[in-house]
Length: 70
Image (cartoon, rainbow, N blue to C red; front, side, top):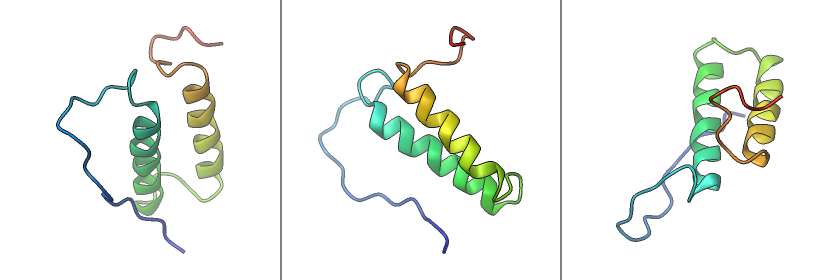
């Protein structure tokens, strides 16, 4: 069963940032992972590992870009 990202609701007219909206950023990044799987870039086996890495990154405060996480 394919999972699809969809816009459910728009709230207010504010800027969305990783620091202020971590749940939104998680879901956007997960949607990218699902798209990569649909395109055959990630396999069914790789997807759960990539999702877990994303969850750990989000739990660790978000950033994870500068190599500051172990």
